[in-house]
Image (cartoon, rainbow, N blue to C red; front, side, top):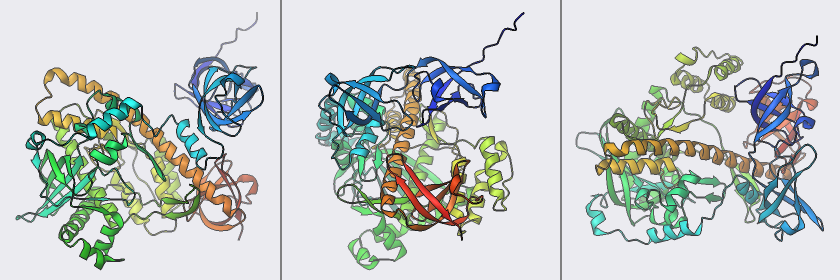
Length: 631
């Protein structure tokens, strides 16, 4: 009698490699399953599939399977390069995980030419024999456009800089509305206060201003004044729905994909100098220990006295550069600037004592020419004024979150959980390379422990690598209607209140605050807004991750583009990652490339200093190849 074979089936998501093979990430959390190219059965990257596990004697290294059924297609549209023939063409996807070219008949070319970047809609999915079939929806960029690769990346992530006409119409109509005397009468008039904005020189969406004064009792009265975007964005209107769908503004080196149209983001809502602006203000009395002893959250109107930039404020506080000229230029505000510097130091010291983790990671600033080509990469400075504004925003966010937690009203919190056990074990093993012992498990690991390690390694040659590895071991922060604390900051209460022009959770929070202040959050609507908070938190977490991925992808693209001019040159670097394929090396300008195993003569350790030669820079493939030079 023949033994009946038991069929082992796994359901999961396809994670495809550029060479056609891939892995299935199982829904039950079990180990990934390898799928050979010949066993994909037409599955595309991101598809939900059912997999038959092959008998163990057919495995080469680990568990292998064959796609038996495609349960759900993930890809509906593809951005790529058009390859045109007389009667048909192919769209070659930009996404290297999407290795499936899309066949296009002549009648669906939509005037696209060979080399153009296009968006194609899939009308027939691939199977074991045939390629995917589609029709071109739009030409994203002409083959001769200087910025075509970035434009195609943006569209590949489903984003657009432009807005639907009805959204633009609503934004323009609301932005033209003058601030009425009735509206001013409802608010605390702070137009006489010395409010200033401090931002980067290119920023146009100024959503936060700050003010300070020393009180008679020696405490500081700190005002954090945030653009009242919710006044202009009606709940559930076209603007609101579009903002929720986008979730966040996306910043890509030299361009912004805004959450709100420029009529609002750069106009009516932006806290431009010497203009009356509607705001929500968190006004805090802070003592010499950095503790908020009292506070109020109010609907206000302000008029910013100056639009200052980080470098100028830093020069004044550090007494560097042209600080004497700057002190003369801003002589009416210098007393307040020095008070701000004083309070920021107090707040920073308090956070350090609490064990708040501050990652001092060098970030590269990519400089572009007039055609958008990368011409240089410099390390971005995080100066005194940058840290000053950071401290004030952190304090306001914490203060607002704590008040609304105790009010038990619908809200969106910023949550950062403890690292999981697997990541923690890997981090412990890594730190032993530097004779550092990380004590405690998941349940009793504290931010202070990690903050102390970073403090002890400050100034060491491998400080940046250790910072990055520890950061990678942390969980990603997310939005939630539940207040679960922020591990990295060592805060029990935290939210995002300070950037409603560019983040939807902040806009939602403003709406809740105003409804509370006006007595509009009656019991009969609490369940409705609790549901809205849950939906907005989920969407905002997803759109934030997508924005971060795109920002990293664009940075990587431009860094490799810059390195194409340096092939054959030698650089000093530090080993930033070790894999079975080779080692990653990060250069002083923050560019990271890989020295493949075949070019290595020995093993290397994280943090080890090396000299490399640039072998190749493949922009389209996002691949930078190094060779480590032996001493």
